[in-house]
Image 1 (cartoon, one colour):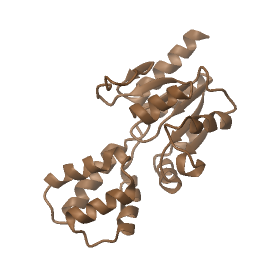
Image 2: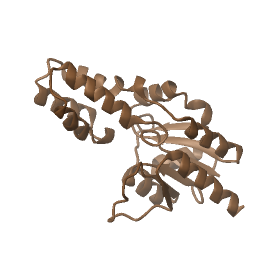
Image 3: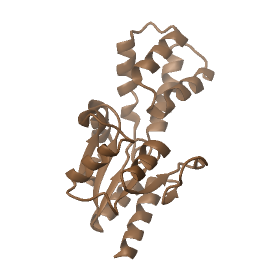
Image 4: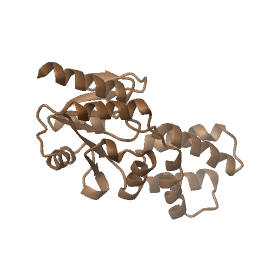
Length: 218
């Protein structure tokens, strides 16, 4: 049984780390906290291309920093604040003990995502990590899920994809033939999209539910 899991805002709290960095960054420029909301929105939970966001920051704040420097700042300066809750690692450990092979499937640059994994200590709890830049393909393209299945020596049929993004994780996973579990983080599912197989507020809750369903199907 394969369990594929997203990383940012699923296994690790990327949002809180970026929000903290954005607050400190805006204040360092002498701007008011009202500008923090703009920066967080412009980031689009990490889905806005880093160079595009860097140019927008430079234009809005007239920042005395080059675009390349801003890109590196956006990629790395928030990573040290990222965390992974113990309930999440407990859920991953329980899944592996229950016979699931676990693969992280994440979009992003190889260097940044590897640093996140090292920062939160994720590697001991999973069997493989698939990063979009490394593979040259990103979610929601089904090919990245097939790469993960090949690494885990398993089949996508009957397996699961767990993540927070309705398109990249849930729609992408479904197109690849996976069952899907949505980490809602308290949000409402978009009415225009096909609903996931199951959903819960946190990754730990979704993973535990998947494991329970798997046990019932045996």
